[in-house]
Figure 1 (spheres, rainbow, N blue to C red):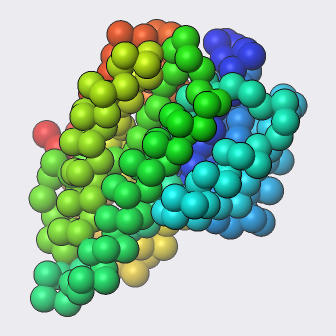
Figure 2: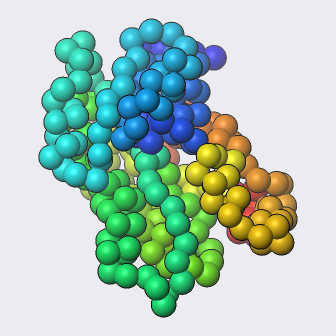
Length: 249
């Protein structure tokens, strides 16, 4: 189904995991995709997996507003209109409150909450966003609604994204811009595998068993992001869809 023919979308965090799976999915459905991440080599790997033609990538630290302004100014000349975006970029780590420093909180908020707001601001006012209808999807986490020891900075940042998205959905509706959030549980990605690989077997098994439907795959999330970008979701904005295999039940 090529429901995104003649559409252009930008995907952040596209060098691996959910971002990579989302970019591939959109290309398979006919979209032209702009890949954004920090790692140049991994972006090239994602680019090689996309279907169709006209895709491109840009290396960018999206936690910096000046970088974001340059990003949209330096897109290829034939990209005059962007139909939407999926913002997947972000970091993850756990630290007990006792050893959580001010710099740690700042890093986590900047990686998730600040970048979401600044990325959206830069896109909306780049004058490249489709004025008829456009959709922006942010990737939050089930950690925003489910307490987990050691995740205070991460949960706060992800929870802030949900609140900010609802506010921006109300503010930008008059511009025909929809903003929604997807909150996954634990997904099999290089980041989560490296993280869980350091855990004792008992702790790792407990995380897996806490998902009644099992650990998720990036495609479980990319399919929901794709839906929210599509015309099938044209009357949905400001919502948070939990995709967690039952973890939050």
